[in-house]
Length: 175
Image 1 (cartoon, one colour):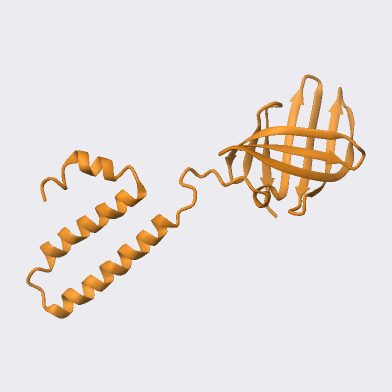
Image 2 (spheres, one colour; image 1 turned 180 degrees about the horizontal axis):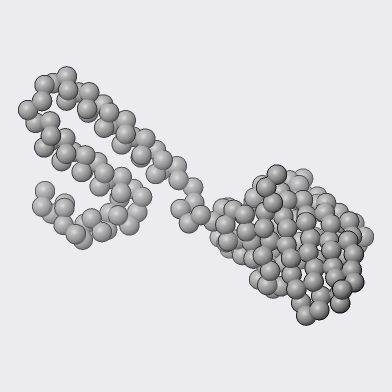
């Protein structure tokens, strides 16, 4: 028992989610032995069932955990939604609000201002996403007027992505 509770074993076990589950079962066993050694059988069974249900619930949660880093998986469903971005390059200020649909189309508006003059343009077209790494993707836009654009994004969290080439953040707009 002493070998199981030394600092190196606990440190190694705590570095993974399954290790934490094993530590929890070990500690629960020690607590049950200490507290319920002389308890009646019905109390032991009741506490045992509660502890098993709790450990099972925790274990299920640990095993089904999708993304411990908080970075969502890059899919069409992740990109789909309404996104806002703003950028400034010298005297040019620009921004857009785009809605990306899961069917690969987009619809939105772009605003640009240069030395105090500007306007808003409605845009639509088709989009595609390519996963480049666990947290990076390339988004390609093909506008209905024939223009094309692409950018490489680093996913920061579920609601923010950073355009690496043009140095701006896109923010998801909640409905």
